[in-house]
Amino acid sequence: MEEIGKTCSCFGHLEVDITDGLVLRTREEIDKAIEGGVRVFLFGGRSDFDDLCYDLVTERMKTSPQLNIKRVFCFALENQLRKPPRWFIKKEYEQLECPAKSFGYWYTAIYYRNIAMIDQSDLVLFCVQERENSGACKAYKYAVKKHKRIVNLFK
Image (cartoon, rainbow, N blue to C red):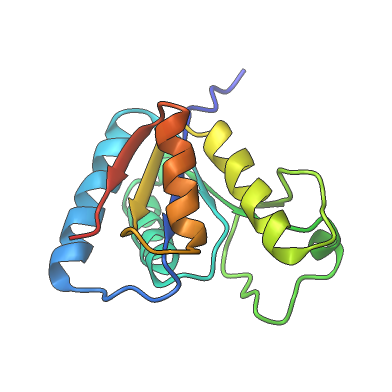
């Protein structure tokens, strides 16, 4: 039976200044996570930071295919599995899922999807700062409350 490994989810604000320093720090954290046994990476947003993490995980998959790393996109609404929204770019995810029960209101669905992602994660990578009404910030506060292993790369 194949061991699945640990899970890491990634969260950031919609717009993040992707500097060389952020790329370097994020690559280091992803490498540490993989060395620590993470094999499943969960993505759910449309943020610049999610895209950066996706690209770095993909880069590592190409250099270490024997590790069987899996990229999973988590939709907020169940019907998006059947008919993905126009903004969704399939890329090369190994799996698509909807980890939380569906809610009719979009923002509520995103919040509970984020909670479900955090609940199943051993590590959560963030690039967030304190902002009012920020979904990424709410996810960060939830992860802290649940005593998850957190790395916040915002500087």
